[in-house]
Image 1: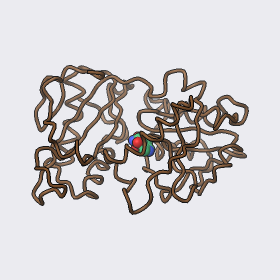
Image 2: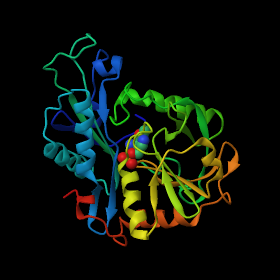
Image 3: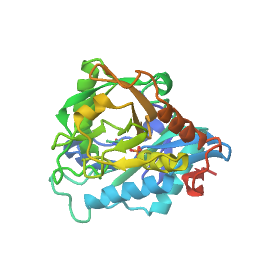
Image 4: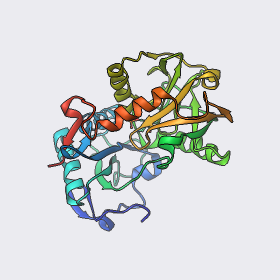
Length: 307
Ligand code: PMP
């Protein structure tokens, strides 16, 4: 396997990693019927804690609700199972991947009304998504020729497996052009999000980010940036952002659970600001990473100890 840990939580049991298999006729494999989360556990001043765990699990159930998918566990049970997956693997820090999917429910496209989702939770080591160097030096990105999903087609508020076909088109194209990541425009050709990140610009000391209506997943890291920016005294505006605003930004950064907070140093080959990490991006990164050593104070529920 390309990722690995000793154990995995699958349908209520913790089992050896290699035993957690499904049949090739699984519904999700054919029709994309899965919802999932990406969550990080950090080694903190309070021991190993999972960042905003309850809210991630709430979003998992929200995604399932949109698709009328029945997850046969309570949110509390899933929260506990996430902690168990970290503890059982003896991980100090981890990336967690809970995934609910339709498995052996037949080949009909429409899930039977009483279909129950399978649920797996993996916890494993996963380093900075865009590379350790990116955190300081930033990444090069390009605007994708692929638009993000249109409203009322596949809802971007659901973190559903199928949505990530859009993300794959965006990130694969970006890589083909030599970029670390792609930036998608929505169907109105306004800036939306990265393949797996929310986006923020800084201009004249004000922070801008696309609104929820721009076909984005409203990330929990995005929400954390709102919180940290406020603590630091910066104004954040949720506004429609035109493509050219990316080129004229003083600073530009991306954020997400896997990515954390990463500066963008160029867009479509044009340098962002001075072409290196800007001061507001740096301050927000320090505030973000400060959550995990206690130098930044956040609501207590944001750091949930695994034991
Ligand atoms: N947008 C997309 C498409 C994503 O996949 C992610 C990662 N989950 C995000 C935004 C950022 O969300 P979060 O900060 O909750 O990880």
